[in-house]
Image (cartoon, helix red, strand yellow):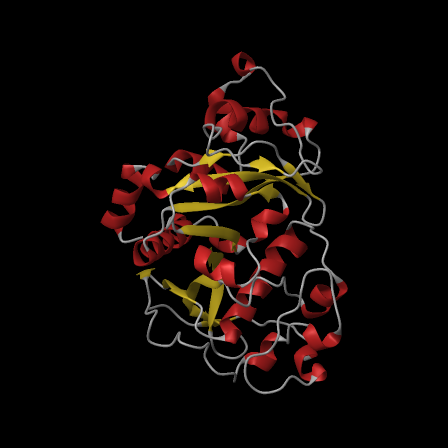
Length: 322
């Protein structure tokens, strides 16, 4: 094992200022709210209890070198993932944070509290509290959990009713979201592979049938995104009956080029790595895109029946252990 490096998170003890009671603090909602409901600072969470029913149920899922993947066990780990999301989405990609997010340098919303958070941590890098640094994350929301807490994040952009009604009773759904990797780790193939390996193990543990969520194209100019959107529309659109449609008031046409005018190889190169990975693995794309002004992106719907996961992908993940 190499030398341990330290990284510092610069917070201003915002959480302590709000005076949260001991135990599980309340997470803030996107769009602001009173101070009482805002997310506490990362440093203020270091001594909090583990999350209910988590300790011992989620050991390390997989590892590669100094990197390991597990489900967040504490409020502190969730806060560290939110800080990573802030660094990537707001500082690097120039999304627009709320004042509360900016003050705490964390991305948070109402869904964080009841989702599972899949983390990649680097055991050789420590934060200011001596914990392994979170360098990658995914947010996971199972259907039975969503049913108890007001539904899915994706439903704010897409009509999910057809998906829920078209699949047999008892179908198990998993919403994927808030995926990001620290910039300095994106060049390592193992980082994203570890996240995918963790997802596959999660799918198996909960016998998930269908994954879905929003994938983001950079920018909000639909005309400038004509090639990737048209490619996804013509080559990866979900079949009738499984095709989820953007909400009418948000709908942006994806069919902006004739199919014959598209060079599939060029179009594939134009896709962000995450969306490219989804479609290569067998995912479908929904009908219509949605402009997300806060994040400065154009979202497309990812619909991924687990039965379509490319055999070569699963076998590669199983074979390599990552």
